[in-house]
Amino acid sequence: TNANMTVQRLPLPQGSRLPTTSTNSSSISSSSTSNNPLSLLSLCLSRSWHAAGKRATTHPHEAALTPHTSSPSKTTSGVTPLLLSIRHNAPPSTILSILAAHPPQILSITPTNATPLHEAALQIDSLPLIVFQRLLQVDASFKSRAATTQDVDGCTPLHILIRSVFYSTPLHTPHHWNVLREFIISCPQACSIADWREYEETPLILTLKAGSFCPKWSLTLENLLHRTVQLMLQHHPRCLEHTNGSNIDYTPLHSAIFHGRCAETVALVLRGLPVASVERRTKAGGETALTFAAMRNENERVFRLLLGEETSCDVVRVRDMLGMCPGHWLW
Image 1: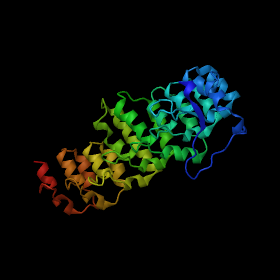
Image 2: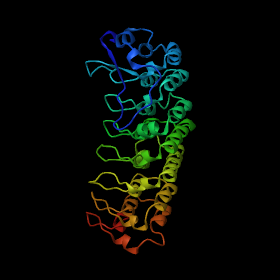
Image 3: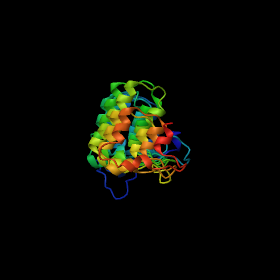
């Protein structure tokens, strides 16, 4: 409980210097802050949000403090007032007041190496757009570091956001698109960071395969996937260079075909790749994108895209690990 906590300053990311407040840190008594039921931290822990919003305005230095307990199992270890307010659905005005009191909180790290941006991505259905906008309007260096921070699974906030939108939510609204748009435009470099899970996927590849795992497929979902891929390629075209998994080596084109993205999305991916990518084989089974299209019995538009004028005729004769050409899979 609060009585067993000591208070420490947030650790600085290696090599960085965060701005300090005008309050002398030596004037802050650890015991008085942790035991004071009116401190910002205590108010957030007790979810007294109205009072917490006022406290952040009158005592901004308290936003720079984080609880630290002797037991790493304590859920309060390493979290800040900002993260607590996001996690427990505080009113937007309270979240914004706490953020304004000490913007570097966005760089704070929990025991699972998550930042407040990770937490916000998990809460997309309950947080309004204005909260995401303000989180992404902090100092550019803070925002960039927070947006590219990887948690214990190697996931950036954008990974979490894509999973929240496309893998968990059965209904998709303009709010989901608006939040995705804010994230991608504000931090495009996150589109090419691979996670540390089994398939080492970037946010782009996660998006291309998402339709196969969404609780409910719809034309609205497919349109949202298309617009998300388009935005990623517009603001960070180099994310097409990354494959998923060193032992699998699926390119974004393989993923788009294998997971049944519409012809318009396949065309987006193809336009950003060299022609030879159509002939590239996976390491796992030796399949080309054309092989996957044949396996799925794709529509004529997809085959026309893959067999364009610049594509080598040899692609139709490439055999996979089973000795099968694309034509074999069509029969």
